[in-house]
Length: 452
Image: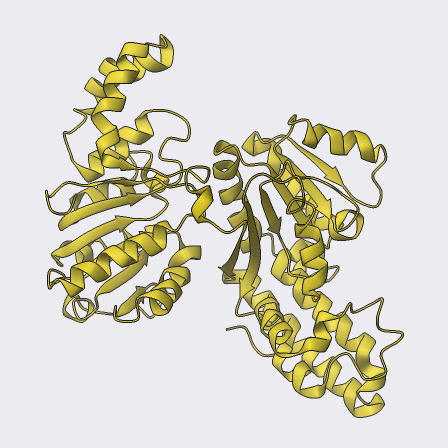
């Protein structure tokens, strides 16, 4: 496509490495001496850090820069010093003049369904940005109707599918209203050369049986402020307990502090504190609700685990608006077998499960996706939950997604798990037998560090 100055959509299923393929392409351009101007990647805010981390890990020769936040004062000349500039859809209109003054080598739209409405400011601005090459990344280029496909091609190759009105007359109305097989074949023949798509099934023999994805979600605004407020208060409580009672007798105080911080990361509404009652936003819940429709549209069968049954309730409240049917299993559930049958028989694509009620004793090889909404201290407990799907009888690859609040206790807990084998033992069941304290003072200091 690059060679022939054509643009297109990389539409691989979720979890098959669209980010990595794009970075590899940019690196190839640099090594060939063609990357004389930077590549601009536009992505949802939650994915900016992921792009930078993936580049650092797989393509360290690429210099990257995230253009986001209040401190963004770079000039066009400064941006041109980087190979890759990464920014958010929300800044397209706000920083329009800057984008217009750089002759970009490549313009990439990640989660390109963000421009599915051609009349939005974001869709109009990206169409005007000067770029030699253009690329859309989307596991679901068409979510609701063919107009979304027209919008993406209008960005990629203006005029290729005619005007919006002509496209509606020629293709949308005949296909969507009259079910015209002939028109669908015509449209498919026109666009498929520019849509690169691999499904999970297509590459199953190349993939490991279980694919783990750690999805870091940044906290911002009031939720980040609340985290820091509670962290400061809890740090003082823990320090006082350590000073008066010593480490061994302070374990309950420490666990309570860490629990409150974990609850802030999941959703402030889990906290029974007056400071939390004013905060309604949850970055992780927003990320989850963004992901689920795409997963369901791909035909995925999803197990979603959380330690907090109240969190499952909050997720439940949001599902009707997405039109996603579900079942839920907690310690309070009656008719357990009937609930399980609804999922295994394919009546619903989503199964909400509390870690305690469903972490063991379930056989659900019908599922191909496992989401851990909140990381658990003991990786063995998480693995047991994952193994509800990843077990004998499973014929598909299982995709395991762990949502982690970036720069918080959740991320530090994962690091601690790796460094400290004793944290991989169960906190509660093994606590009676354990003679040494669960957390040392250095661990407490690490876990109670400021957000960031």
